[in-house]
Length: 109
Length: 118
Image (cartoon, rainbow over all chains, first blue to last red):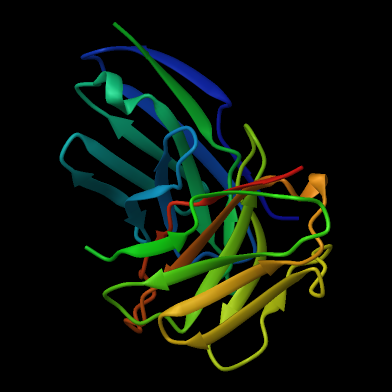
């Protein structure tokens, strides 16, 4: 079956750096997405990786290793507003999105 | 940036009635739209894929006669929850994929609809 694993919850301190990992086993691969979702709101797009390596976008970076079925989202200079759930999603060979359960990130002052 | 408008944001209805939720792509065309359901503290569950001009594709376990989907134009898809019951209470989210023809087209989400059936 298809599976995406990410930690359920993480805690970090304001101003610090946090890395959220995502591992996947899917039927084919056509890209990996990271989304941010605040409680009670819809997800918002953060990043997209289809080739191995690091994609940087401001305070957020996303890394992909297709051979390892692994990605991480790196958040720098954490702010309180970064408290949210972070969803990893993989597009499989049928272009269907397979979603992880999300990682709830708690930022403490 | 691309905007998807979902309406209404909140709705409370009585058991047995029907509720229609609209999803519009405001500044792009979307041949394909998706409807999700999300329970508290759980991930998104794909209910169906809506394709303009053709019948929606429903995921296993989703009743197509209960969750009616219409995708009449390249910018509008609707989900109608028919004969709603309290167990249908949930957060429903639509998303639309831009017709860019590129594999990396991200999904753009509506703001979601909180449905409460009393």
